[in-house]
Image (cartoon, rainbow, N blue to C red; front, side, top):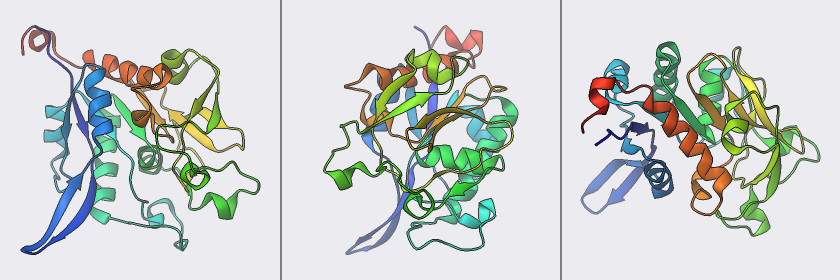
Length: 255
């Protein structure tokens, strides 16, 4: 029986106050786990307190950087924090940036989602728009719940930059519909990263790295749509398929 690729997923930290004490939790929506599992991977949650990135990469075949709160603007050179920037967590920032940098160096397959595209961009020296409302006039509404749409609805179109990127290879379309739940976005892509897709208002919706085995990061949440929309399921399938080449032949024959 073939070994299922092990996919490490970064969670969101949360403080849970109970009668018997306060606990730091590592939280993750089941939609990430379900999407990886449907694509053939074995999902595991990575604790952000882990500092041995070598050990993490020795354990997984691919990494999924999940959504969540905002990065510290100081990490990409901003000297002020916009009033809408929220949930800055130094431990998560340190973990994700350090882990991605080593994954980049080792050519480990990576998928980034929402905050994930921002973490990847910042890790390689890119910058972010701290608040789309404040910086982009006449933009598309990127927080679709304000318009009464649920997480399983699509709300706007993205246009794929060209056919030479893994997003087009997965989806096979130049335009398709996505959901949207973010107030920040990529400003300047980091050196080495290329734009894979944009929305109608020019917001960068996807990046990829041409020198990595697989590195695709999207601003929307395909994990919320993958069970209903083949375009979004295809993103996870492409990612998990790319991780299979990371499995040593002798390990692939048994589980």
